[in-house]
Image 1 (cartoon, rainbow, N blue to C red):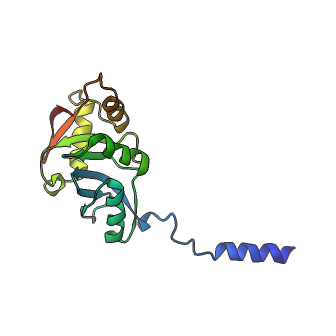
Image 2: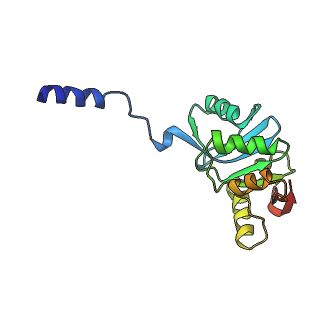
Image 3: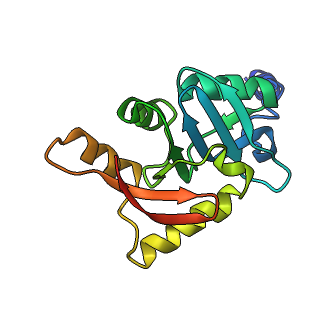
Length: 172
């Protein structure tokens, strides 16, 4: 019996699970810009560049970006979704239900092309966070925005950003 247990433990330890769960084996999505079929993803980390892909939806975009980066993309810590031209309800539903972004993820509007090319996702998200704390920005977590969009009686207002940060609120 002892030999059987020892063999079982050795087989379990040698199953090739070494890389699963390691932080450096994944890219952690920080922010995403969605402009029609052009999707730009920014990741946590100093040495990561935004990844741009063409895809029909955010789920396909993540799959393409995983092929480009060679790493699995974890979306559970996503801080901000910047929407430009897209079907907002369907896009946010994909982000929330299929990609499992954080319920506290901000949804913002932008009219700037390639919003992350002129400033970092960290700075832009921080600008929105400060506007929320100071009472200038509308509540914009993905749960609140989705709830408002699905209720036709409610006017859905979210923060708008440009390449410098928060510039006001806009109705979507």
